[in-house]
Image 1 (cartoon, rainbow, N blue to C red):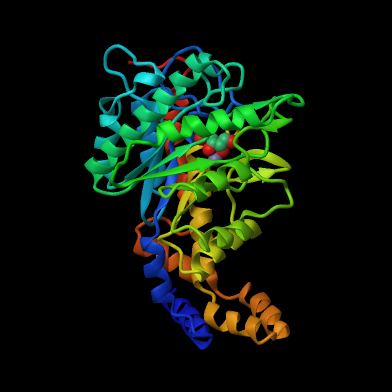
Image 2: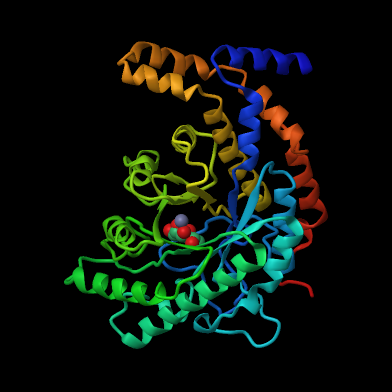
Length: 420
Ligand code: RNT
Ligand code: ZN
């Protein structure tokens, strides 16, 4: 084992890569893990609304979390098998009510104190999303751009409450809190007016973002289309890109499921880095469309990681995960997705980028191609193993036995209604 590691160290050293340095950088890069993989984006409001807004979780694997305690326990199991620095990404619909439930326009920091305690205990940061879907007032697919000022006001108040909650979280945890806005607003069929909804959205956002907070980073997330909203998306890429460009503290979040299949988010990151000091990211895997499959160690994930690492942007790109697969063990899904992103980051850290950039500048495209191809069979797995050992998590597929044990001990005993 040791000699394999030394062998790998020597091999990488010959191309100018120090694997010890790679491991120490990797350790410091936080991954924000989305809570919503644990319960198919359900949340805890119990308002009788199924998932809406043009997104869908498919599958019916047993054992999904039904209560805050179950979701926290499942999340905890997942993070025990994921190396490195972690944050938890919450949605407003995961508010925990002790007494009377509050509607979305009236959410308060106290509805998230249990999450804050959980995060403190586990050493996690928290990111936050306002929730503009799965609610009776979002039924017709419009929220912040709705023609009815009363409905708009409801959702503006939601955004305002959520930013106050994000500020509370940031203060409690003494780290930034990314507050992201994604709205489903769009139309199934060809619009008669594309501009008015966008002007209304612009005005709603201005109202939501008018209060200033330390340590809250705001972002807006565009999308190409949603199910049932195929013809028009109010919050399009151009709309939000322009909005972010015109507002100092609002950033454009890139979700790599939200573009045409031939567009690559890996290519967009550097464009944004030329103009913004933060680039929030949702890493997902889209199969033909925004299907939100579990993230794998695949070419696009690797290329996204390459962009982050070779542009020295690990503190600018805020990495979050966004997928929801209900057809497999949900805890395993979290672990696969998070470990895949970390593998991609490590893979990127094991490239001699300065040298490769020089080859590009010198137009030596032959050596550039040859070296990149040869690097694909370098002993990456030895370094990944060393990293996992350093972080006290299983290095290979053996982590699954812990999830299977948990499935047997805990998940299998969950029927459809929660026990107290
Ligand atoms: C939807 C967006 C959004 C959601 C989550 C639940 O297409 O990707 O980020 O997935 O907020
Ligand atoms: Zn997303």
